[in-house]
Amino acid sequence: MLRSALKKLLSPKPCAPVRSAPAGALRVEALEDRSVPATFTVGNGYATIQAALNAAAARTGADTVVVPAGTYTESVVINDTFGVTLRASGNAIIKAPTTVTAPSDLAALGGAVIDVYSKNVTITGLTVNAAGSDVSAGIRVIKGGDATIRNNTVTGVKAPADPAFGVGIQVGSRRVGAAGAGNAVLEKNTITDYFAAGVLVDGASASATVTGNTIIGRRGLNGGVTQYGVQMSFGAFGSVEDNRISGNDTGNAGQGSVSAGVFLYQVGAKDVLVDANRVFGNEDGILVQSSAGGPSSIVLSGNKVYANTGFAGITVIDSSDVSVLDNDVYSNDTSNGIALLESSQITVDGNTVYDNALADGIYVQGGSGNAISNNVSRNNGYNGIFLDGSSGNTVTNNTTRTNGGNGVKVFGGGSNILTSGTSNSNAFDGILLEETVGNTVSNYTLKNNDGYGLHLLSATGTVTSNNTFGGNDRGSVG
Image 1 (cartoon, rainbow, N blue to C red):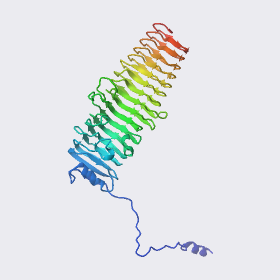
Image 2: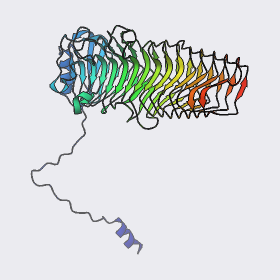
Image 3: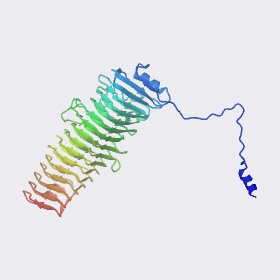
Image 4: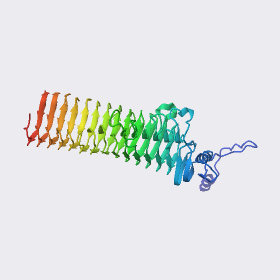
């Protein structure tokens, strides 16, 4: 019995029949691409950068094109199915020709020194000089291109036929339909002497991460035309982080439109973050206009905004659902530190606004439903916080002190709630309500102001409770 069981166990198992291949037929196994990336060096068999890029594009795989030190007068197009790295070796300068003709589908944009039409592209270490050329952009990522642009210098894009252009690095465009898609990482570049924008990210099919760049405008030499360090517009999205942005000045002595370090226009459908930048020496520091989205879809946080000369360090115009959080806004020669104009549902929280000699610290004109909380507004030339014709706002747990006007001023409007704050040692009143209706002031500490602690001037229907007064020169309530 045991022997029978072992024989059964060790007997070969029946197998399914194998169908023979037809006579003469070969069976071929498909293998993955195993091409080894190649390096193409300009000058080593390739007279121009474009020739080396074309050779790389003709091969399978993501290759590298090396540009040795020297000056190369040409414009180039990167259109490589497998991607490519364009890398400088030494001081390699691409000098734009006097005239660059754009392809027909990009005619509305003009030419660029480097155009990127493909994905998996890296550009690093180059100097792109467009001085004396008619190009509209230094480096442009368009037609669905996707690129990392790192450690380059882009300069001199300032003579376009259309004053809307003159861009250091451009990602996407709303002006050319489906060809306007683009995505890029822009990191540690230096961008100077541009006409319209240092970085432009434009259109709903455009996105960019803009990190660690130095972006310097023309410092008042722009002949009355606005310029922006970074512009995201018309549905573009992405982040602007840890950059140094300065010198964006229209050059028209404050008349008409203003330039800005960062300009967000008609964004917010997808998230936009402006974080931890140093924005200084511009007209407006950060300007958000005509933008709306979901809650917290537009966030301005952790920026240092100083030494700007326009309307405000941070300005939000005709917008909603913008969060202005934890910024330092100081030493600006502007009319306001932070300004909200005809905007609603804006959160202004945790900011420090100080030493703005000619300014209200936080200024709100029109609009409604804004939340202004946990801010410190001190040593500004006029009011610490000024609500001007604005209604339904909540002003909570703010500190306003040593300002040249009132700690908090509310003029016109109504139904604002002012609560749980401190307003001390201001040159006029701790809180002034003038020509207002139905406001609430509660749980405030109002001390040592040169005027009244709380001054009600034609302020009907004001509800006050649990406020603390002391040492105000004209008395507690007037």
